[in-house]
Length: 561
Image (cartoon, rainbow, N blue to C red; front, side, top):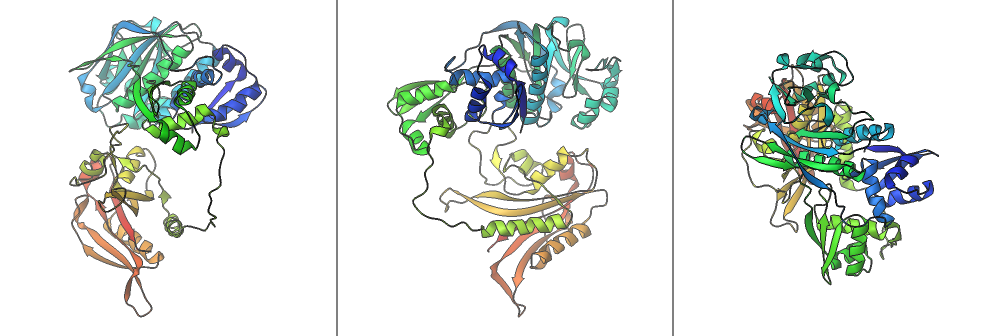
C-alpha cells in the first residue's frame, strides 16, 4: 500500500493553522491510516488503495479540517472554462484511446510540495493505473506551451524531443530503448507501430504517455499554472484520476479550469466534478454499527468526513459524494464513513454471548497442502481478483458465453463479472509480465462463482486450482507429467480421457478425474475427488493475450471432503 511521507511543518502550512504532533498522530488512525513511523520532524503514514484521494497531504488535510470543524460538508471548488481543447487522434482507439485534461491556475510550488506532487503522481500510477498500463498522468508547466493541444498517434522514427531529466533530443524509439523510464515501460507500447504523443499548436512535445514527459514542461518553483493530462485505456479510471489531482491542487489554492476533449464522434468537458447522490437508511446504520443514532447525528457525522448530507425523513438521509471519492459504491460504504465521523474508537466492542473454541478450518488445511505441493514442484503462487470481464473470460479464451454472475454497478469495464474459472486470470498475469524471463510457472488456488437458484444467495462458490507454464518448448507431455505429479501427491489416482476444449489445441487436451482408492483397490468417491482438464493452450488464445510463446495449463475443481 502507498506510504506518504511529510513534515509536520508542511502539514500545518497546508492546514492553515498549527496542531501538535501528538494531536496529528492521535487523529490519523481515525480516518483510516496506519502510522508506519514518526520522529520530531517527519511522519510516515500508509493508506488503503480504496482512498487514493489521501495520497497527497492536501487530501489528508481536507478530512482533518472536517474533524477539527474548520470546514465541514461537501468541499466546493472554483471551476470555470478555459476555452482550451485537447484534440484526440482517432488512430489512438486501439492504442490508448482516452484522455481527460484540465488547467489549474494560481498554484504555488516549493521544494516540499514539488516532491509531494511527484510522489502523489506515482502512487496514483500504481493504485489506479496498474503501473501506468490503465492510467498515466502528466503535469506540465502551462506557460511554456501554446494551446490548442493534440493527443496523437506518432511514428516513432519521425518525432524527437528532450525527455525529462535529459539534455539530448532523441526520437521515440531511442527513448524507449535507452531512457530509464523508457526501458521500464516499453512493454506497454511494444506491440504498436505508433506511439501516443501530446503536442501543442507549435508541435512542441509535452509528453509521450505512458512513458515520459518532456523536459520542456518540467515543473519548478516558479511554475504558477499547470496543464494536467491523464491518458489511459479505461475512461472511468482516467476521469477519476483527473478529479483526484485537480481537487488536490484546489485544496492548496489553485483555480480549476475545464478543457474540451474532442473525439471523432463527441466532445467531453473535463473534469466533471458533479457530485453523486446516494441514500442511507438510519436503521441500517444503527444495526451495523450497534450505536443509537438520530438523523441529525448522522448528518453531522457525514459532514465531518467531508460528505454532503441532509435528512429527508426521520429514517432517510440523502448523501452527496464528491467526484474524487471513488470508494463509495454502496450504502455500507456510507455507513463506514458514519463510523469514522462518530469516531471508531468510541464504538465499544462486545463479546458474543456464545463461547467458541477456535480450530483450523479443514478446507484451509487442504488448500495449504495444495499450495505446498505446487510450490514444491517449482511454481509461484498468484492471487488475482474474482472480478473479470466477458472479453477476458469468454472472448479471449474462445469460450461460448453462458450464464454468469454479473456486477450490477461495475467500477471499470474490465471488472463486470465474477469468474467461473481461473485460467484466464493467469493468462492476464502472463500478459502483464511478458518482460520477465522464461520459463514462467504460476498457479492459483481460488474461488469461482456459479449461478444457483437453490442457494440462499443465488450463487454457488467452488474452489479450484489452475496452473500455467510458458516457455519456448512447453508441450502436452510436460503438462501431463505436472498434472499426474500433483494428483499423486494429494493421494489420488488419476484417470484421463481425450476431450475437445475451445481454449486448447484440438487433440492436445484431456479431461481428468482424480479419486481416492481404498486398500482393496476400489474407488471411494465419498472421501473426495478432483475433476478438470489439462493441455496445450490454442495459439489464438495465446495471441489474444499478446503472448508469444507456447502455454500449457491445467485446471481442477475440488469435490467432497
